Image 1: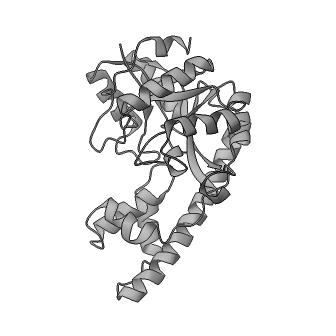
Image 2 (image 1 turned 90 degrees about the vertical axis):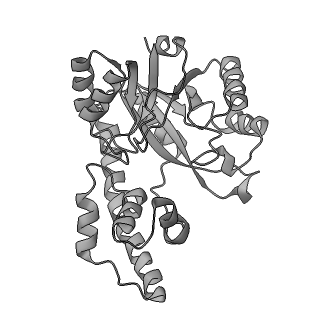
Length: 288
């Protein structure tokens, strides 16, 4: 049984549409999956239908960006962490309303980031981005607008060579704070919609994770014990960038605290890694 509970569509920052994802999932013999777009559930009704047509077991999903802090780490300053919501009612009014509010903020944030970019371009003698550029960036997005879309546009304009260079040279420096969604509210929204909430890729060395606070696995799980256990139902134990030690550590932790254990490729289809993370069949049983 091939399982992948962490996939992104074109509605957020993936490369494929929902329909294309299911076509590829069928080709790869994936039998249980979830599309977990960033701060958006707009694709979920279509995904549910596409899963039924493909004969693939499906569970609703979302990846929420949460503002988190711990007084002993990072000088008590806030960082971003990702949490995965699963098996919620895709028509839940409170969840939909909050995500719509966050989407509006993302557009405002993107406009401010572009203004900051233009200030940097002026220093370097690069022509500024115009409203037409902003409209073109928005037109390239099926769902939620974010920094990756701006990065890709800078590549297309020839200002940078690739997405990583866009972040390194401009987008980190020109960033604007994300919408402040806190864990307590994220948990309440998902659980009130009948779902489960899971800490995503806790030890991802190249992503949004607890590595920002500490590289010690023991310290990471101590942070979870102290500040998160009341609000989460599980931990993502298998991930494309996990090493064996990370997976083993979080499996032990989840079993001690009776948390559900999930996993996925975090596939953005660049390249397509969907279904390549080996996840045991018992993960699917936790969602029955």
